[in-house]
Length: 199
Image 1 (cartoon, rainbow, N blue to C red):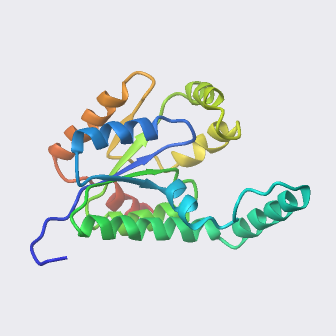
Image 2: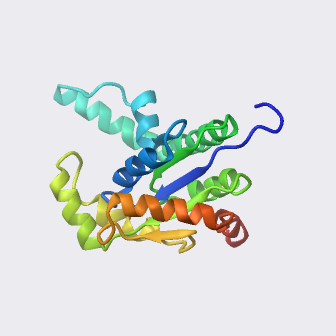
């Protein structure tokens, strides 16, 4: 990065499954324009593919299940979160605005996000529709296992510290996006730095 070049904005949308993160991220992309980018753990998983291609045999599915268990027990997911956070900071330092779609359930991943995003004034946004709404949206999606919304809801928001909390069940994605931009205009975010003092 050249000396004096502006650092991009970082907006972290944190919520459980089917909380409206992706819809809000897309609306933000439309409003922010180039060179904004949208990323998240799903993007890294698609790129890295730690379990390989989807298996078609019973033995392949059994092997994949074992790989997933091993991945979780050896903190593979935490390593991917750390990779994501550092990639986001690098993009921002290169002058890109970055919208991060995430679910910070693990306190270690949350702390790493605070370490990475606090110094660069990342905005921490809680995406928090009522649980029943998330469960209904999750059932309507049909592209992932049901039950994640309930399982992760309290874990994702346990810390209770955000710069902004949005309820996408009462706001459209465009209204959520405008609220994010307004919060950015109101002054430097503080949530990630607060989290560092609490952890």
